[in-house]
View 1 (cartoon, rainbow, N blue to C red):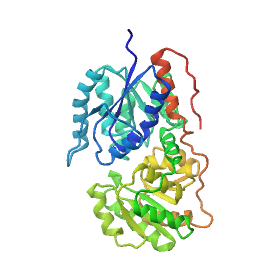
View 2: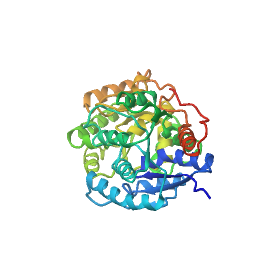
View 3: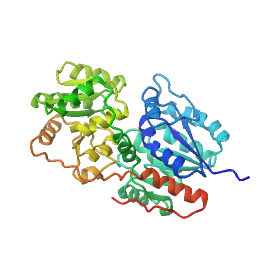
View 4: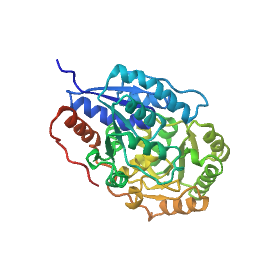
Length: 386
């Protein structure tokens, strides 16, 4: 009896779980001839488990690499060692990774060393600055070097890969799986579970105020740049009495301490615990403005016509900027305040067109590409084009 092809999906962080869930679901639902398993590194702990539960992801393997005070190098070495034994036991034909974390790079390298093909979901993103975001820009480039399947989310990402002499036969434009996940969760219409979010959403729906969603946690902004962001946010709240700023604070001490110092006493800035994914979707759906240094949120907000100020100097997701849905403002206090004021004015400068990052069928396309190759059949779906 012939052994069915096997795919191992490796997940390390909450965003990876969210973005891999549509791929896992599509493989399980559409491709019964392929066995799909999940390995979790544990790079995130508290943030990861709720995401796994929301999407019904039940890991077959767990590494539990998380340690207090660990470095990126520590994560890479632990994942590399731990995944070697899992790969030998699971014997996959393909390892799938998503994004640009330490887990992603280590898993792709471990698979390569075991002569297992690697598929990179969200391949081809480039900021062209090796230090921003750090270390993600280098980790994703290295992963693309190892990968044999490059699932580019947009035509621009495909073009970046082709400029680097990646084989055109290995590059597929699929759209971004985060749009799939976002739409599936939005359809649930789940009431907000976070009490602060529930109160703010109730006010917004009664027409008694506006929500500004803030996320800021990038490593390269630690110190003075992050403090300038927080001072600007305070200025924005002061200038707009109808605005409530909701800030799910990343647990990193480099973020928590300045957030509490500079924003903690403002009556209309609420510092809350990280939101679970359905709550985050609800916040995006109701936000008048999003201020973020998150890559995923840059991709998600345009679905709900929420204008975005990107709190970074460069972005590997320029499609939103080009489409007029986002604007790069960096960490300059004056510029953030100025552009937020325009976005919150009666005639905002930012408009959010059709989401340039996907149509909600990226997971199906990735499953189709893999099954066509592994099962020796013709593809059923065309590449996505923005």
